Image (cartoon, rainbow, N blue to C red; front, top):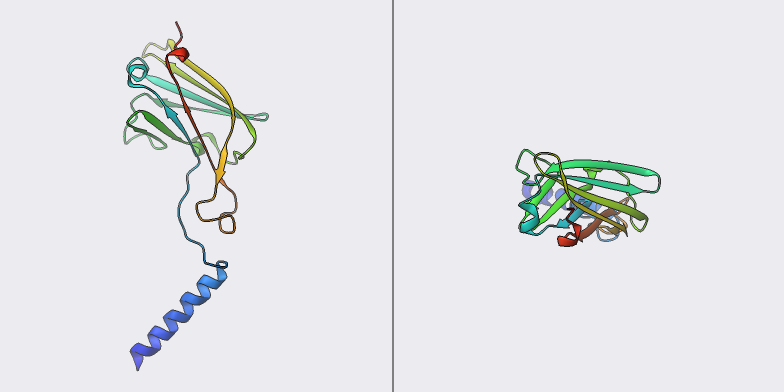
Amino acid sequence: MGRRTTTVIASGVLMTLLSACGQGGCSTLGGESSIRIQVPSAIRKVVDNFRLELCQGDRCASVNFPGKPGSADPGVVLEEDAYTVDVALLGKRWQAGTDSGLTLLGFTKKGRTVLRHTEQFAFDGYYPNGKDCDKDPFVRHGTSVGGEDLVD
């Protein structure tokens, strides 16, 4: 009898939680606001450090990160030929669908600028748990650099 009572109580608690979270219940999937930057290996070989500058309206922020990030560099991941930069490194409240400006600079060990990439864009917004569950959208943008971005 004790086991059946426990099952009924646990089921009741679960149903209450699901109904409190909305129609189908909300998952707790994590989302990350990020900028993904494709950088060919030939360019990564000459760049020691990067500086990413982001502007939206009159708000601007920047972050520096090494060309070969390691485990001691939270917020920047290099996978194959792309860096994924957590936008939280640049602060919060970047808006989806709003005109934004991005500048990526690359420097040698001696501090000489060897790469300059600029573009205008608008972040894509996404809701990993659905619009009813996530208060604000996470934002993301993808770009790539190439030989035309190298500075003489």
